[in-house]
Length: 93
Image (cartoon, rainbow, N blue to C red; front, side, top):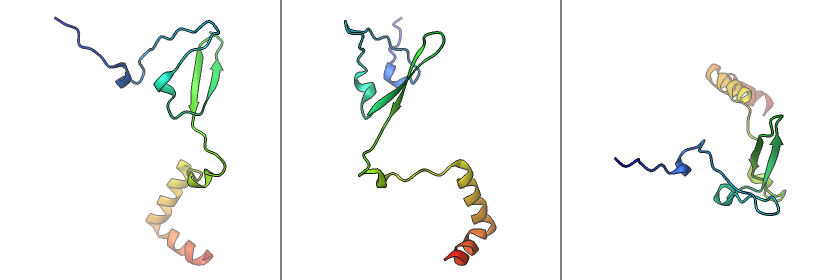
């Protein structure tokens, strides 16, 4: 019986082995698509972790407002349910 093929791209935690070239570089290929930089960490055991970053230019930053925290969202929902949000807008507006 044939073993089913697994597409490693569909498995989020799939282990991929890469080999460095003569200068010690590795190629991430499609894994780095849309990524502008990586934060690199090396732990006590020598494990290397790359954390991808997507950065935008200052000119385009207005398109990406600062996201709300969970606390801010929770407070806003509570205020909306209790009716305090509407009264607060009229007081300050």
